[in-house]
Image 1 (tube, rainbow, N blue to C red):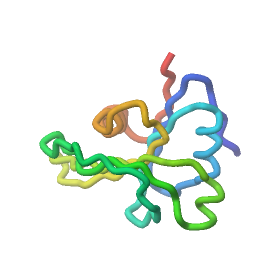
Image 2: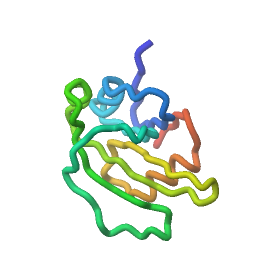
Image 3: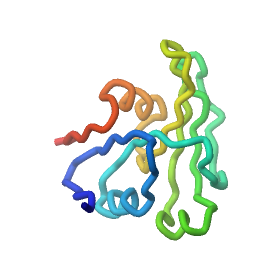
Image 4: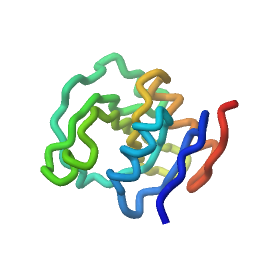
Length: 123
């Protein structure tokens, strides 16, 4: 069943299988997503923020392009991986989003606060 996109929605997903085609549909509809991704994600760095306050838990904030041909064909736009260390659970989390308007810390906190596999409206 295809993912339906709703106006003013933010989609939060866990990291089972990254469906770049579905993520690109969300992006093309002008909507946003945050998903956990696997460390095996292959990409080239377009830009990287070196102004990271690691005391917040942030580790990296990058702008990337996918490099695996099939993935790049399915999602040809830039993406933003955000790496966050969750000290409460001693876990390094890697998030992937198409939202470049919010801070990296907001990306991590949004996912951490709202939780996995939720959909909610901004409006």
